[in-house]
Length: 88
Image 1: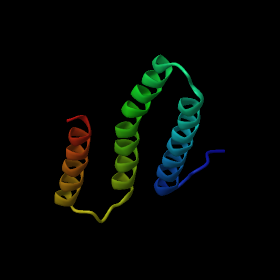
Image 2: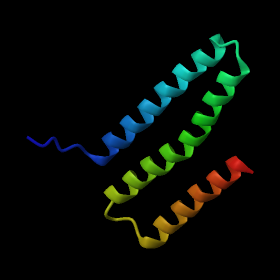
Image 3: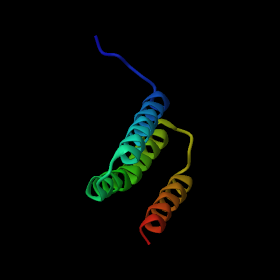
């Protein structure tokens, strides 16, 4: 049996899992004594953030049928600017 789930539920679960991972990594960073481990975890979290943002954004936009093409372009452009700004 195929379980059909709404896109907003999947996006929320992706965000929830990302948040749990962030909290777990924060605890590991807090308890870690080696800078090497801290750098590795920060690098992983820094790369994971934009991926989660784009994934949940894509799910939300693909699920909405009444959004115009122009608004989709504006939202993706805004997400792109957020990602560029986080690396600058």
